[in-house]
Amino acid sequence: MESTGRTLVCSVLFLDIVEYSKKPVAEQLELKQAFNEVLANALEQVPQRDRIILDTGDGAAVTFMGDPEDALFASIAVRDHAGAVPVRLGVNLGPVRLVKDLNDQVNIIGDGINVAQRVMSFARPGQLLVSRSFYEVVSCLSRDYANLFRHEGARTDKHVREHDVYSVTAGMPATRRLGDTFSQTADPEEPRHWLAGTGPFGLRRSALLIAPVLFLLIIAGGVGARALMPEEPRAATKPLAKALAAGAPVSAVQPQSAETAAAAKKIAHLEKKPERADKAEAGASGATRVELAIAPWGEVLLDGKRRGVSPPLRVLEVAPGPHTVEIRNSTFPAYVEKVQVKSGEAVRIRHRFR
Image 1 (cartoon, helix red, strand yellow):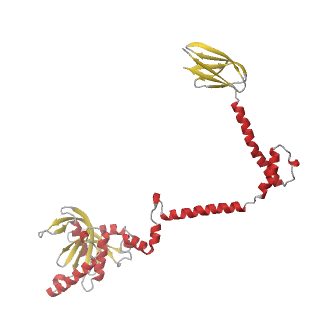
Image 2 (cartoon, rainbow, N blue to C red; image 1 turned 135 degrees about the horizontal axis):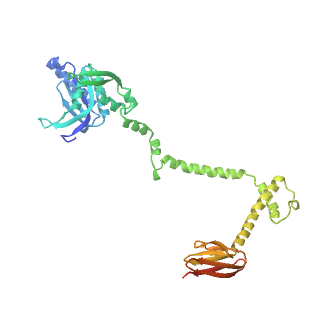
Image 3 (cartoon, one colour; image 1 turned 60 degrees about the vertical axis):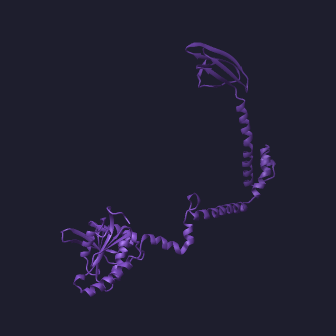
């Protein structure tokens, strides 16, 4: 139970027995007992900590501290099971404050309960009306809830305050609350509920079960496709491919079909590629060059032609034979070195200007 002195926004159901004060005392007692029994049955599903009941003599005011749906379902239940008890009902959603009364019991005051009483006063016997604030909240929870209401227009109370009211024209909805929808769909089919859960790594259990099956289907499909591929054309091209790779003309080999000959040429071409790559690599490894290590820097001239500044220039690609390398720095005398470069060799020049 909430502590007193706090202002809360709650749903309030205000209801009374029509013309109760005009009845004889004996009849009042019977009506009140029947009324209390109907109200108690309607509130069975609402925990005691979520409700406060005030006896108003000719009726009651019930404050719902929890879901607005509790007020909706309880009020519909009272209306539908009142039987011979003529009741009228009003529901409002608004601010209330918990206080202690003269008997040190929790009481409710505030505009929330006042408006609920005004809304109830507009209802006819057996009619359930709700305020606009309550309608706007509950109708947004579910389309089924929105279909329960009908707009009745504006009403003005004795204090000249206007209230926009809605009547609840339908009975208890098939689904009592949103939470029940999930529990009802999950309980009859527990295995499906388990598969919809989350497993390791945040993946759904259904996905974890399906993934191995898909993997096996992919492997089986690949094996089946390979088994259906013909091996004869590939085997038939091997002798011809070897002969072509060795340099023999196609006419010198056993006659083959046009398709087989084309396949053999392609295989021979592929088999010769490594040899050409090896030759290219060998040529690259035998490149003739001059390697430079100059500090702090120098302008490099090769045989009188400017080639750049070192660093960043580190390597000069040159032809085999004699070459003259000149390195200039504006602050120091030029450095000149004559080199004899042989094919496949590298010559290194180191110099530091001081």
